[in-house]
Amino acid sequence: MPTSSRAPFALGRELLLLLAATPRRPLGGPWRSAHSPPTLAEGGREPAGQKEKVEARKLKPLLEDGPDLKEFLSGDLADRNKWDEYKGNLIRGKGERLRLPPWLKTKIPVGKNYNRLKNTLRELNLHTVCEEARCPNIGECWGGGEYATATATIMLMGDTCTRGCRFCSVKTARAPPPLDPAEPHKTAHAIAAWGLDYVVLTSVDRDDISDGGAAHIAETIRHLKEKKPELLVECLTPDFRGDLAAVATVASSGLDVYAHNVETVRELQRKARDPRANIDQSLSVLRHAKAVQPSLLTKTSIMLGLGETDEQVISTMKEIRDAGVDCLTLGQYMQPTKRHLKVEEYVTPEKFQQWERVGKELGFVYTASGPLVRSSYKAGEFFLKNLLQQRKVDDRA
Image 1 (tube, rainbow, N blue to C red):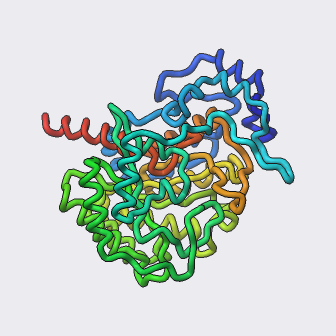
Image 2: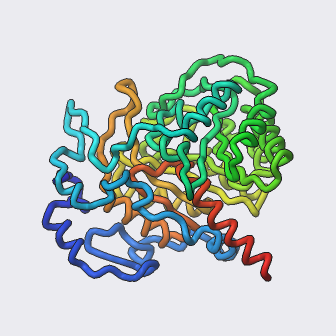
């Protein structure tokens, strides 16, 4: 049985049994318990103005059928009985290193599609954040399947970052190698060869370049759209040191989803992120992207398990929504190597469900919250399904 000392989410065996026996409200209804995080009625204010509400209503049909928690659990570990069997601690004690709980264990990546994507990347000397950041979902995202779209997150501008965030395993250097001017074309060629309908682009931070690489990213997006106009492009960008002109360059390049991660709660920014990054700068990036291109979906992500409190998570979620952000993902922080920040807590799937409910209350168009959720995990399946449904509706109208 998981052991956790942090109130109000101490999920002992008695509470699990109580939860299993409690009737649930229909999907979309406000399920509440004494252990649920506070609602807006309990002290929160309505974060979005009338204009944002109208935009949210327009976007909601695109996203309302998104994945639920079981999409982000590993195989048969979605069975809650498996959680009861786990005897390890969930909160780190002094000098302790937490063991991985069963709901975070994933299969070794294998399969023809996985190998095909990997070979294409090596041939073209392209990089993915899936590999560089050691994402646990690489096998599932790259593997695709009979009814799923294989999705890879291409990392532009090389594999070396000028920043040193304490949670990230990407290589760092003050002066990385120069940009490859052929990379935008090679990336478009690779995506065309894969036959994907949805692609996620991200990049390292390049503080050594005057515009942070914004023009390079925008050129890549334009090449992709020229080769395949129907391709849906999401871009997870750096903060460009707060340079809003660089943000505008990417936002106006033709992409569909503008993503930038705040990473953690306000109180843990200095602990986790490079000193050149902060939450106010990140929120200004997201606000400006929407101001430049109001039709864009904006998206950000929070890692849990770094020692944050429930109140800090709620406060940060409100700040994000106040910035007009449409989509929020919350996932478990997993220590990539012994040199990086230790995991302070393994958050239970039940608690992730509660944060998803808070996201709905705050008015996010979509909130993806689960142990293995990452900012670009299952992006292709999720957006393609809903956008194609919306297109069919529009065609019939």
